[in-house]
Length: 532
Image 1 (cartoon, rainbow, N blue to C red):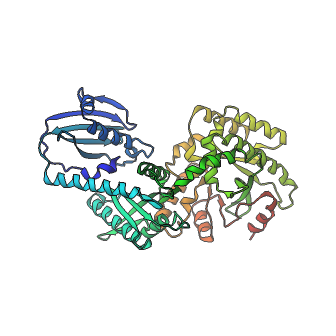
Image 2 (image 1 turned 90 degrees about the vertical axis):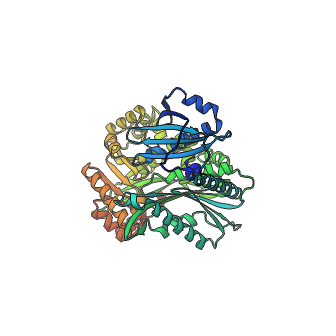
Image 3 (image 1 turned 90 degrees about the horizontal axis):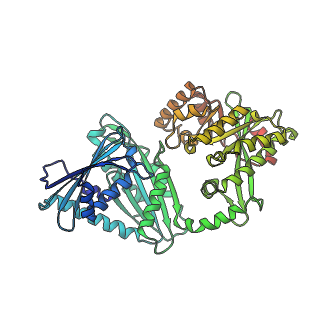
């Protein structure tokens, strides 16, 4: 991993080499070309080979480190082999060209004092990191810092990272009463550990506090720089958890949020994994045991706040554990293949509820129903035909249903595109859900030919107090308006957010301000809430 070698970066100075070799990789880590003795050089020195392979592997991992670089990068590291030969490995990362050029120089000269100091600092850092990762009952956090482009970024970049690390470490010391370890493991990554025996400490408390404290900006010499914090958290209450597994867990959680345009965090308890199998077995029986429920949340017209549609939201009321969050069981259902049966249950029950709405005196008209569809369901070649068949049985019109596809999970496979085209042709309306999470793609919006785009609540929440977020939201809204898409703003929780959303062109609004999700039997409460 890059961070392990961060303190070994060399300056651009004279380096008398005895050996020189190079290779070319693509951004996925595949070797495209190598100088004849490059691979044999790696094979002859296992320590060198391990260093190069781990760097390449880290860069093309799921974090997509190479692709996230906005500009070309030159990264150097030094490796000292067992026979005292010194290798300087330089990686030239060209994101536009789509390649990584690696070249290796080696010499038998003695290390300079500064090089020896860097190696000693790295060994000390590695020792402290491993020792800390062995702590029991500890909250671990891995923080990635990203600074947005600024005319003076190059001049102040090092100073900014130093200041952010100092501010974060000081705040961490303050809120944890000094019961922590803080290590800067690379230029832009910080590792924190908080050992505490209290069982009721919320793992989200620390990352939430740090993000709130930093306010996404830092002031250096009267220049304001905007930054983003991505935090992966992990809590281990078990003993003998390997440091490697903890690091894997931290990186996995960091990957969940690192592509978000805003500061976010993702956390997990280590013992969650031991409960995963039990949760899966319970979920598999949830339909049979009638533990799944459908809740509905109103979506209102921005002009007159009249009810436009109801979004069907699945809920799991576990017989022993109570309500289990969709953030837990929906990903589990997708990964395990249960999403097909659960998705079918959601569709059938939502359509049945839709057919019964005319019998409900709470509404003067029949609102549309919005149903979430997983890409895993669309991979079934019979999905569209089955859905159309079920509609015919209930004598419902497809235009009364909006099918929501999560934008970040959408895959442009021929089968999914074909299924979407069939559904669109038959008369279903299509909405792209959670737009704004991760690498949102406007060209994808055009290809899907959707009717609605639902802006994720992470774009909305805090926009009333954060000018930077407001600028981003305004820009996204303008592009979607130019594409002719109807916009649904999620996360509306107060009158001020409503006003901002309307100013930025929202066609429809959704959030607790208009009503929390509730069961079909309580639909009458919607009529009261949205006519205030």
